[in-house]
Image (cartoon, rainbow, N blue to C red; front, side, top):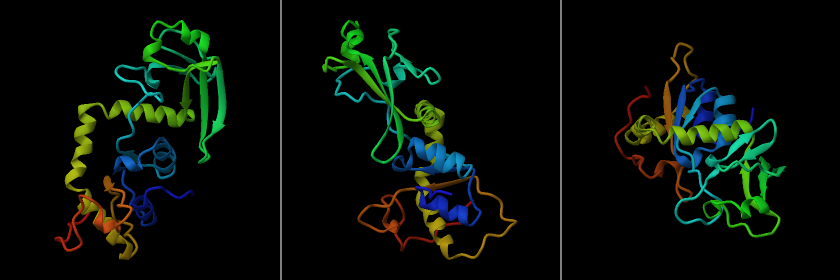
Length: 220
C-alpha cells in the first residue's frame, strides 16, 4: 500500500480509526490525493478545496478555462466552446511521474475563431489553444470538486472545521502514544488535519492551540 500524503490518515489507518470523511486544508487536496490516497486506498472521502479552474495563459478579464471544453475520453478528442475539435492528443508524464495528456487545437482553427481573445494567445504557427489533462478518473474528480465547492452547502459544511481543527489535530497526534484501538470502538465519522508550517513543529500549526493550551476534548 502506497504512503498517504496526509500523516494523520496513516496514523488513523494504523489504529483502525479511519473516519468516513477527512477534512483537510487546500495544501493537501489534489486530484491524485482524492482518487488514490483517499477514495481508493483508504475508502474515505477527502474533503477540502482544490485550486480554481484557470487558464494557463496570462489572460485579463473573462477567459475560457478548461471547463469550457468537452472531453471525449474514448475518442481522445476535445471540443471547444465554438465546436472546433482538437487535432492532437499526446500522452506524456510530468517530472513527478504523473501521467498527463497534452491536447492541442490547430493554429488555423484558433486564428479564425471569433472568441480567440478570450481563449488563447498562442502564436507559434502550428498550434492554437492547448490543454493539459490528468488521467480520466483524476480529471473528473478534480472537476467535480470544483463544482461542489462553489455551492453554499459545501462551503458551510467545510467551514465547521475552522473551530475544531486545532483540537482534533492535537488529539490525533496524541493517539501515537495510546494503546491499540478497541475492536468495539466505533468508526469516527469525520476528522481534520492541517499541514504543519515548514519552519516549525506540527504543534505550531497556524490557527492551532499552543502546547500549553487547555487539553482538547476527545474525538467524536
